[in-house]
Length: 422
Image (cartoon, rainbow, N blue to C red; front, side):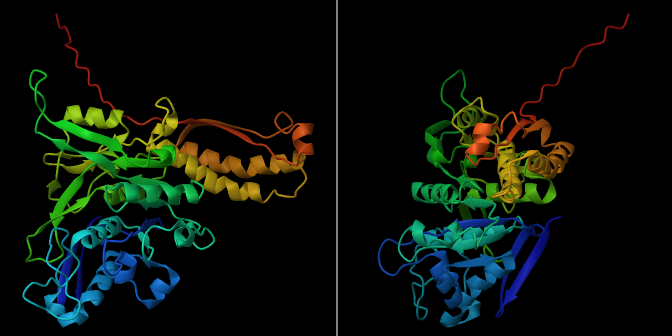
């Protein structure tokens, strides 16, 4: 059920609509340097307190918490009544000491775009870990990679469609050993309008390519931006933000209301929140092109809303079942669930009793997934056939798990037949 949350802080009222109920899932972002010269600015340095910056991250659980961080940042400059909603399109210099004739008290430019991406993700109910380097991306000092600190990150998403953010997501997912799923943007743009007529004209995809290709089955690329209002009731400024946060949010909704092995796309789990319209709605021809190039998209259905309408991963092999988001995330779930069971066998004797114990521990997990629609069938082989004397002498323990995933409906064919009545 959608909720409307009003956050009133220091006499400044901001309104954020369509926030869903909270989830246990955790998303993560790395906010890179948001200006090229002068003082370093990122979401962490600008909105984190001293303790956050010392730790190297902040954990935001709700939209209200995020708006609190925003208001606290700017209210002290010249009073809370002058704080403005984040505006990526506003080019007026932000205030640092006091107001002037050309002064914007709030976030603007790239900093505002990143702020909105986190805000949009939080509306779907997940918590968000925000980290960032003081200068540029630095893998060595990023807390997101510390699995002892953050063992259960579910989604890492890009804050914009640029290649830098895509590479950050790729490095974070790979650096964590593919135990989470990445959402990145796409390069290129759409021009024109409508379907081609007689094969001439129509909408064209210009240089559209997925980013973060080396994520493979552990990530998805999505094209497009959405347009929505800002935080202030009386302000009708249109904000444009990328759809990666919303796609990540659909994954959070899927986990909360269903299971990771369900598709995040479609009318049930793919609804895009807080949107006036898509900046560019792809036509049928362009949708076909995007799908063929492993790029996901959203589409607006008149009278229904706007929905994530594809679910392809970046898997290179088009014949692989892991080209689908739900199947790829099923595998991530299984690895994260079964690995701890397997690790308990370290330094145990590789004999029939140990192998039977492992199979008995894993079987209920697999049966549950079959019962909830994730698998059609499975088999677990862990016996003398794959734990041969040579394997045992090598101090190894081998399990072969064969999966038969369920398939989702991608095309609907309705057949109407006339009944011949004499």
